[in-house]
Length: 113
Length: 118
Image (cartoon, helix red, strand yellow):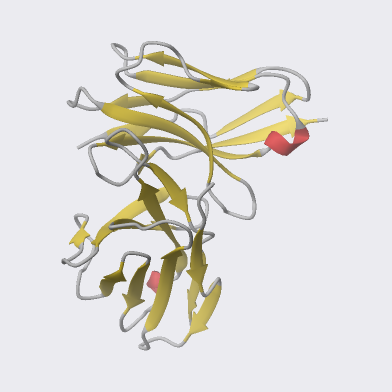
């Protein structure tokens, strides 16, 4: 079974600074997708960024980028120029085949003004 | 992006009663939908996969007779919590993947349903 580990229950960053959230996963599959989701207090899940395992190039979406290390099974999220609206729970997630998502335990991101 | 709705957004019921939660894909068809459960301050846990026209598949530890899933059409899946008890109180979220090009479709999440069992 696949597992996703987020070792940082909570992270704090100053507004406009950069923060990196870590995620590792375990799988025996070679083809899969990885995601970062944001869950604000409304609890609506919002896709931040996704990475296809077969792509070597790291995904980027505006201020959000990932560092995907397939051999190390690591998938960290970097948020540049942090904004107050970035404050939320962030979940790393894995999907293989047509299965549902396996989520990590989440990281609570606090933005200090 | 695609829209997935859930109804109701919150429900309070008495112990022993059954509660039905609907999940609809509003602007695309979904042959598969997923149901997750999220307890307070915890992560989302996959409960089951809803398949249009066939039986749902349940994750290990999820009672299929307690959590009845019906995927009646390409846009609707329902989750019925039968004989609900206080320990079933949780946030239930559905998602639907929309196929787009590759083999793996992006999943779109509903806004969730907060169930409180008294």
